[in-house]
Length: 340
Image 1 (cartoon, one colour):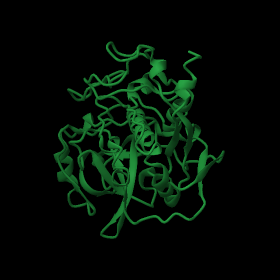
Image 2: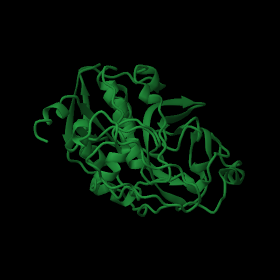
Image 3: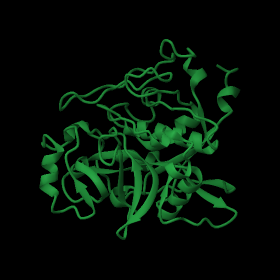
Image 4: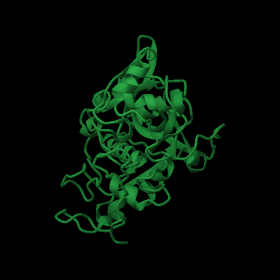
């Protein structure tokens, strides 16, 4: 890995306009995404729309867009001893095959917790990558969405910056998928059973589930060493991913995105629904069109087996203006044991 220094600056990016706070289930009246696809098939030039398994309203988002300017973390600048050569195509799964978490698609279910789910997915990937595959820890969204009150309101939406700051300051416990017996706090919420359903995040718990190898959540939590945002610059985002691993980002979701099946997504139709947080794991070019390779949190039967691609280099739907990441601390949880 190339040597680097992360310098923090307190430059705050200002948005030129607001897009409204997160609103739960602000989906269109379409009963299935196939109906949306039929509406827009003549408009999609670089991507294919089709029918995904769940109705549009069941693909929940959850980023409070208006809170972004005041919650964005200080920016980081990646400095290396020699100029990085950025490949035309990059996939973190191929560079770090020892980190199987990169292949895991999470499911936020019937909860506007994408801000938390994509954050812990990115943290899990970076935890492994930074250790060169020696350290594996599955950070769980349940602890973050229930205990980080400065991040937002659990299933009712949140923001990216405070989640990464919380990782550094308070740590986050482990957790597997819904209905699993994995980790301290397995994910607590299943997919929506009916349109308009609304789940609530559980209360913050200081105890791990019964049968887990530790009881006190503070013994299980692992920490970040540094958290930061990235400039709204395509190359800077690519450089950070190439050296440190995937990053978390948010963008504005419109109705047509629910019907995404494959290709390079570009918004063509439908009203704004809210903000959504995802993980960027790479990039590429297809037929002259540049794209980001992203990991979603709507299960592996949505889109390209849970992944999707979106236009790169144009800040399309704000995909490049709210990007966050951090570096792990492998010793802090040991050092803190004597305090708790």
